[in-house]
Length: 87
Ligand SMILES: [Zn+2]
Image 1 (cartoon, protein in one colour):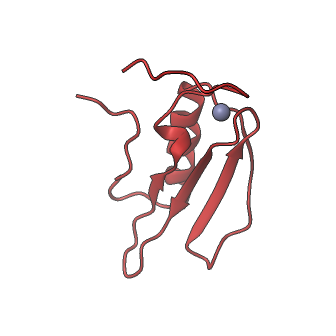
Image 2: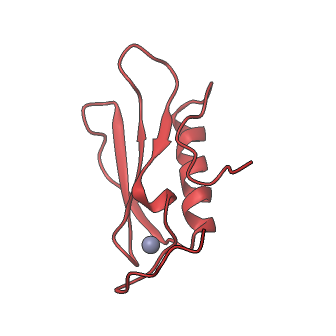
Image 3: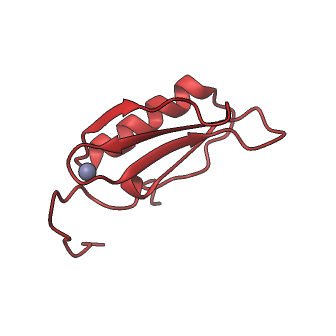
Protein backbone atom coordinates (compact mmCIF):
# COMPACT_ATOMS: atom_id res chain seq x y z
CA UNK A 1 0.00 0.00 0.00
CA UNK A 2 1.53 3.23 -1.11
CA UNK A 3 0.49 6.31 0.81
CA UNK A 4 3.07 8.61 -0.71
CA UNK A 5 1.69 11.29 -2.95
CA UNK A 6 -1.76 10.78 -1.57
CA UNK A 7 -4.09 13.42 -2.88
CA UNK A 8 -7.40 12.46 -1.41
CA UNK A 9 -7.93 12.91 2.30
CA UNK A 10 -11.42 12.62 3.52
CA UNK A 11 -12.98 14.42 6.43
CA UNK A 12 -10.22 16.87 7.08
CA UNK A 13 -10.26 20.60 7.65
CA UNK A 14 -7.79 23.10 6.33
CA UNK A 15 -5.40 22.75 9.26
CA UNK A 16 -5.26 18.98 9.02
CA UNK A 17 -4.79 19.18 5.28
CA UNK A 18 -1.98 21.68 5.71
CA UNK A 19 -0.35 19.48 8.34
CA UNK A 20 -0.57 16.44 6.09
CA UNK A 21 0.95 18.38 3.23
CA UNK A 22 3.83 19.54 5.42
CA UNK A 23 4.54 16.04 6.67
CA UNK A 24 4.32 14.49 3.23
CA UNK A 25 6.63 17.10 1.78
CA UNK A 26 9.07 16.83 4.67
CA UNK A 27 9.31 13.08 4.25
CA UNK A 28 10.45 13.69 0.70
CA UNK A 29 13.09 16.13 1.83
CA UNK A 30 11.33 19.31 0.84
CA UNK A 31 11.70 22.51 2.80
CA UNK A 32 8.45 24.36 2.32
CA UNK A 33 8.40 28.12 2.54
CA UNK A 34 5.51 30.16 3.80
CA UNK A 35 2.05 29.29 2.62
CA UNK A 36 0.86 31.86 0.16
CA UNK A 37 -2.32 33.85 0.49
CA UNK A 38 -5.49 31.90 0.04
CA UNK A 39 -6.44 31.80 -3.62
CA UNK A 40 -10.13 32.39 -4.01
CA UNK A 41 -10.64 31.21 -0.42
CA UNK A 42 -10.33 27.64 -1.61
CA UNK A 43 -6.69 27.06 -2.30
CA UNK A 44 -3.34 27.68 -0.65
CA UNK A 45 0.06 26.98 -2.11
CA UNK A 46 3.49 26.54 -0.57
CA UNK A 47 6.73 26.28 -2.51
CA UNK A 48 9.80 24.26 -1.62
CA UNK A 49 12.85 26.43 -0.96
CA UNK A 50 15.08 23.72 -2.32
CA UNK A 51 13.64 22.58 -5.61
CA UNK A 52 10.73 24.92 -6.22
CA UNK A 53 8.13 22.19 -6.38
CA UNK A 54 4.69 23.04 -5.06
CA UNK A 55 2.30 21.70 -2.47
CA UNK A 56 -1.24 22.88 -2.23
CA UNK A 57 -4.38 22.43 -0.22
CA UNK A 58 -7.63 22.91 -2.02
CA UNK A 59 -11.27 22.92 -1.05
CA UNK A 60 -13.26 21.61 -4.01
CA UNK A 61 -16.47 23.52 -4.78
CA UNK A 62 -19.40 22.16 -2.85
CA UNK A 63 -17.24 20.16 -0.47
CA UNK A 64 -16.17 20.67 3.12
CA UNK A 65 -13.09 18.51 2.93
CA UNK A 66 -9.73 19.97 2.07
CA UNK A 67 -7.56 17.98 -0.30
CA UNK A 68 -3.80 17.90 -0.53
CA UNK A 69 -1.81 17.77 -3.72
CA UNK A 70 1.19 19.08 -5.57
CA UNK A 71 4.18 17.84 -7.47
CA UNK A 72 6.33 18.07 -4.32
CA UNK A 73 4.37 15.11 -2.97
CA UNK A 74 5.14 12.92 -5.93
CA UNK A 75 8.87 13.51 -6.14
CA UNK A 76 11.79 13.74 -3.75
CA UNK A 77 13.51 17.06 -3.26
CA UNK A 78 16.37 17.52 -5.68
CA UNK A 79 17.63 21.10 -5.60
CA UNK A 80 18.98 22.21 -8.91
CA UNK A 81 19.27 18.69 -10.17
CA UNK A 82 16.70 16.40 -11.66
CA UNK A 83 17.21 12.94 -10.24
CA UNK A 84 15.77 9.72 -11.53
CA UNK A 85 12.91 8.52 -9.41
CA UNK A 86 13.75 5.44 -7.45
CA UNK A 87 10.34 3.84 -7.44
ZN1 LIG B 1 12.06 20.31 -2.64
